[in-house]
Image (cartoon, rainbow, N blue to C red; front, side, top):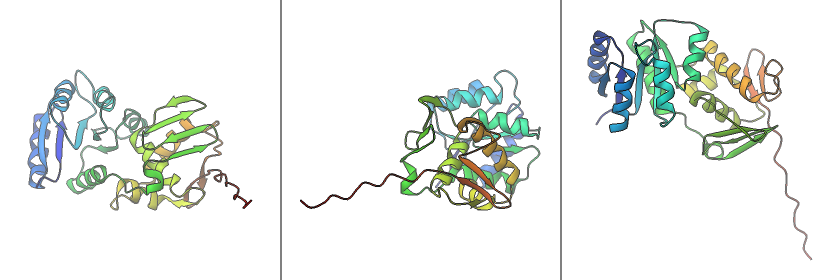
Length: 240
């Protein structure tokens, strides 16, 4: 039984060949494409569980391809690039990628990132498809829809996943490690800088003043806390 259907998109034939051999040996069903346009055509023809997408390709770039995929699909996407900077990380996540791996990468790291992206996060029933409101923000987790004062705001998959996990533990300080392991998987508990990038991006989208957050609070030396007002309590009915 296949461990997952993977689409590898890279203009370098050697990289495609190596990744195909490596991933096939791990039980994955692998298809490859050398351009973003070819990848989009394959995605229209058949379903995939995860896309490994090179960021720096001629023609349609990885970022453009990622945005095009995300416009019509929630397939997991991991961006691959030779660059390593916060700006590139932000660009990849803003385009809709679930994760970001820098070349050259080691196979165990890539496989761990893939397992996390394929697994997705185990959400509680209260946050899997519920609606949450705080301040001017309204989040419909089931529809993956976020609005602020009636204006729709687009969150990347990982931004929504982090928000959803914190919503399940509203008003409680949650450690960096717990968030990372819940959202990215048990192999990814130490990448605090990566989590900070996600949180900073979230704040730019949901906070009235991102530099002075009132909803998504930093707990020094611990992690983060999502401040949510208590739900109104319905008065008890009196017997007549």
